[in-house]
Amino acid sequence: MELLNFVADFSSEFVETPKENFNEKTIYKDLPEWDSVLALSIISMIDDNYNKRISGAELRSCQTIQDLFDVIKAL
Image (cartoon, rainbow, N blue to C red):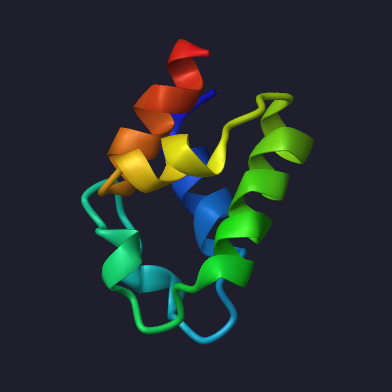
């Protein structure tokens, strides 16, 4: 699993936010589009693309895309 691919996969779940707004330092919870439905979509994407299961609590504990990547990589 590579960080750049993860950022691309993560950003693909967002419909309204331009892809160039995403990098490893993006604080995704601050994006206007972020909501509970999108959080579930991210959890599903991680399960489908990376065969890793994360909880809502694990997702909430992260601030940046890098933080989330590190959690997933450690699983």
